[in-house]
Image (cartoon, rainbow, N blue to C red):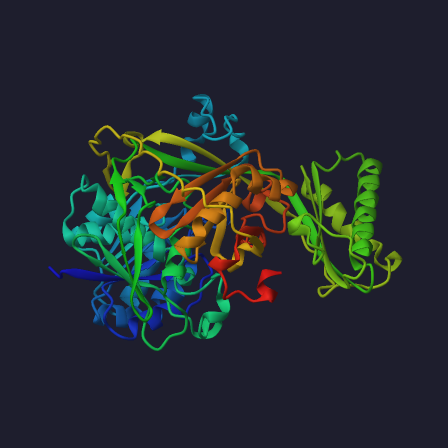
Length: 597
């Protein structure tokens, strides 16, 4: 047994670049390639594809592009592949890949893991009066349900590898499971070695979003070399004790640093002391990340606790339709012109709805991009270029489409300065909402190539961790200056359903007390008041001198249910990094007057 294994993250979402696989195979020292394709929105899209064609419902480009062009090299280099590209139809994905392998005359064994798809049990869940785990809402109308999937863990992946699989295809599993499964199989860990499971899950979390760990989506993006053309995909080298390093292939762009990896670690984790996975509950709060060489960091210190007895299950369902347009305005008072045009478009559309006896819009949205709409809005007449984002929600496709008809129909009556890049009318699309609940693990039968089994761990009693003591209050006798948070910290944000997750990492531990003092739950809630958070939670991660915020009910439903320009909170960290923090000038003498302003 090798004392360490190299696992490369070759995909962070369905649509990731095709260049990853050949790049990662080039140097010939990778043991595993792992691919993450699935998000809640993706599941609903794949479900609709399967409804139209029973042979679809999986990430087709995994087979045709990632594998098809590289299978011979994968076989020659003895690289194992693990992917959740199966989506809602892993068996069809496996059949397509096996056919391709046979066509190329290769000897590769494909294992398919299924059983996560529970859509056939929708009526049963409704009859049992299943409630949504966050809101307490009733189970949706079965006729509107698009998908229901349990989030499986790493145990079946490890079993498939132990049984001799060269390529493992799964349906819905937690993103990090593709990495953890490889580690469990290779090192022979038992399922009660919780610290190792947590640490390897962190390795999976670091690489599950691909190049976000190697300089993509990074606060200091201008420091990253050749990121947009030749960025390197992440590689973790995991030891038997589960400590690992993060790096990227030689002669590639990007950046692997304490900052880039810290940003990815804190990305979308909610409570960092209770990151719940099917195999282990992780505590990432005291993880240490250290630069050991150029573009290589070491990561250690994750703590594991016994896993829950239940799987998390996510259903998606159709809740009406949405329609929207992007229209630009140029000239003085551009923001005022855009708002005027947007309000008139809505009024015309609402009048037509009344005339044809349709119900009114369930929801409307006007955002003027370029006029600080994401910061609360501005009517500054000196703003000379903006984009109007106009959207509505309606119970019917035709009702939603009326907005598009009326908005384009009044284009000649517009205030001066309107322009539209695409002259065609966009089509309404379904609104997809998320419904999450839990289900006992022994209620979910997992299949590996049609062999049934269940995965329940004899878990110990799980004791909740004690929150870390907050940073000590800093002295305030010195004269203070006000600087933007970005001068003191890095930030990364994303979504958790209808929640926004914002991670803030101090550039220097000496700044942390001042950041903690400024960014309270109350101040952050007030700063994002225009998005109406119901509450804000704040968590401390002393290991990387970071703070994680969770803003509840702040994304207008999130994902494909939202009418917002940023329905997944991808820009929320950038918004917060503009926040002004008071700090002694003596702590940051290197800052220029320009930065301080």
